Length: 308
Image (cartoon, rainbow, N blue to C red; front, side, top):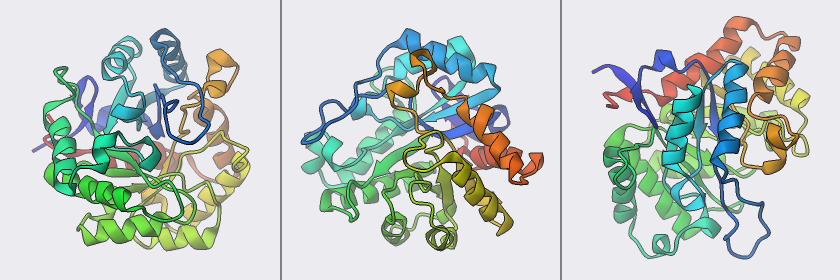
């Protein structure tokens, strides 16, 4: 069967994705989470249509929205935004991390959680027919895996086996190998795993250990310079490329924060294209390699047999 990528408008050929940022957010609402201060929700369809349009104008082709059902995901609005702008949007599915779980996650078995995820992948959300194209972001909240989070990770793994979709993670510093241990036990091939937020702690020894697993290394906090400066991210990506890891590198901006929107005075989804890719070029990364990271790798990891 032909390889396809599931978007909110239906399946497309991987060749149609264009420049792809593999971990972002269109809508988000974590304002209800327990025991913590959180950002204001992003809910305005008109505003977000304009934001995604800016990305299109810069040459963007696809955004992977890793927001989930219980943290503000809006499938029908995402489909309308995609139709209006022409940008492909790939929707995530699953459960985020412990403080953000709906209560039923604490009560259900691993098998039942997996069935919930698989049902949405195969049948779409509610009665809309809008289907996810990736599992996640699946996260842990601390520097260790809580018991309920382990059940969710294992459920995601079993949903992968049933559907073929890749798994993308919310990875606090120095926790990727904890994920890997569980996913390996569940038999998930490493080339179907994306470890997200690996530019939160730029330590080459840790990145090399993760690279040895064969999973994807994703720098998706680009533009969040209070965590790490983008020029350091560019230096580390260039070094990973020199060390032979270009086939497992992905980039994105993890954009759920209101101050980062262009309509609010921020840099928007196009910052990676406008500002970060020139930094990679300054580090000696050639155009073919940039295309590989922003086009070839995303198309490969998002594609499954017969997604339609």
